[in-house]
Amino acid sequence: MRSSTRDTRYAGFWLRMWAFLLDSICLTALLVPAALAIYGVAYFSPTPAWFRGPADIFLQIVLPFVLVFWFWKRWLATPGKMLLASKIVDAESGSDPSSRQLIVRYLGYFASLMPLGLGFLWIAADPRKQGWHDKMAGTVVVVDCSAEGSQRLWRLLVLATVISLSALALGGLVGAAWLWNQRASLASSWEAAQRAQDEGVLWGSGNSGEACVEQALQRLDRCQGWLCGYRSSLFLGGCLFSCESSTTFCDQVPTSWSSLLSWQQEHCRRLGRSDLGCLQVMSIPVAHCRQLAQQPPEVTSPGFVQ
Picture 1: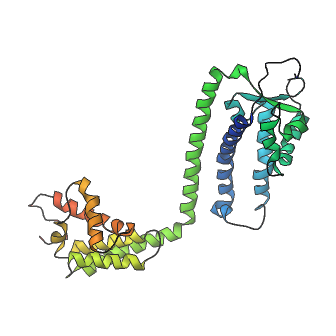
Picture 2 (picture 1 turned 90 degrees about the vertical axis):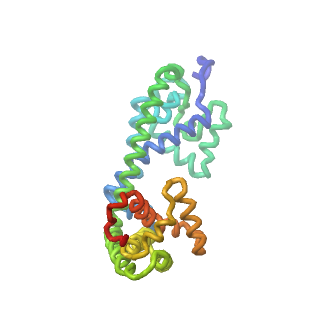
Picture 3 (picture 1 turned 135 degrees about the vertical axis):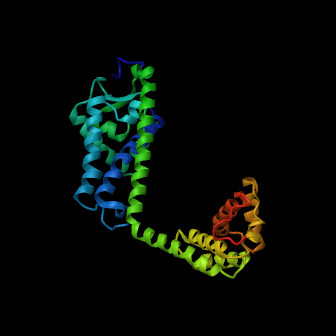
């Protein structure tokens, strides 16, 4: 190959780095859901051990080797290399590398990685774009000219679709696992939110709308948790729902959506607040007031004294 193929195009450092990143995304989209299914979200918590158990060894060591070797043996390339129209060949003959070469090449990754990745950086300076793992295995990565045309386009579309669907599935699985792990905390927070609204209804009797706002902001400063602002907002909604001066408070609320945010900001500034928590607290009362304003005059809004 060295002497007979002057037109050989070796895949350079940046092309191979992009192929590696694409392969990493695909592999992560496969392994993370599997790890979550076996170990749950605790898999991502700090641990002094390298592996969490036999299944983790399989996921981190055995499965990546099997997948990479299979792609190399079957297509001479991983998905990332296929997308970028490159393939692995024997450095001397240009033919398909043997299984022994592919195994040595995979193990050579560790030799390339250990000295701060110098074996991979070597690709940028080498005349034939060989990393240390390529030199150990006697292989080179070349641009597959026959795949650069129409094949490249459909591979791009297919891989982009797979990556997008994998990312969505991974995000859904991670979100579902987190929700499942936090189910007790979420249930407690939801019950606390319902209690906050009931407390607001009781506290609002005999008080003014402005007093309801002040009390809700005081609760915001005292409570904790990611539903803190929501609970305080529900309290304010319940308080306005039962106080006699709710209509006086709601008369201040603009009817156009474009003016609502600026009104909330201005109202919070008058109260000496500039935090996002104040805006969140004001969100549900604003919705109550808009609903009241949109009702016909002859209809009495439940819970509000007209």
